[in-house]
Image (cartoon, rainbow, N blue to C red; front, side, top):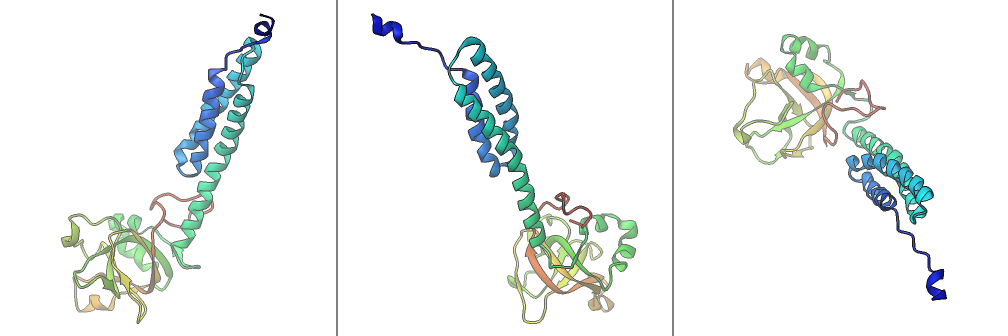
Length: 228
């Protein structure tokens, strides 16, 4: 009987358990960005739990504190990690010193398309888009670039004013795929357009092709105003 009287049981705070669980899930925010938002309810529930623990003499003080700590740390660091990783991928898409230009924005500005392209002649630029499959083998030394995912599969052929021709250096080739790419090259007038009115008017010469790893219309805080 004396031993039983010495046992003091206090229920654990549900808010503390929930806060700790949310804090653990916040760790996954380094992989899945949206989970970093769980830091907000994690901190709020942790603070409410600490207040309830003191007022009602509940258990779970350490759990609530750990939940708050994990939520704060992961909630702040996870977004910074994703922005830094975005910047790394952004810079890997283009050759150093090449001006990044939104190809889609120029194509959609049909009224000023030619004048805007002419203003870039002779410059080293980077366009992002999709290669048009020409049906002549998978390894390409020259191909046409369209600003968005081609519609209708392999048979789709956009207008010659909506594409730019890409020419790789001699001895270089690129294995065609349907993924978006970033092409760095020098913009010149396409010499084939003189004899073929249906050929693209402009050519990215001596080009290098890299996978497009970032969204076409989103820029990180350190990449602002540098094209897509």
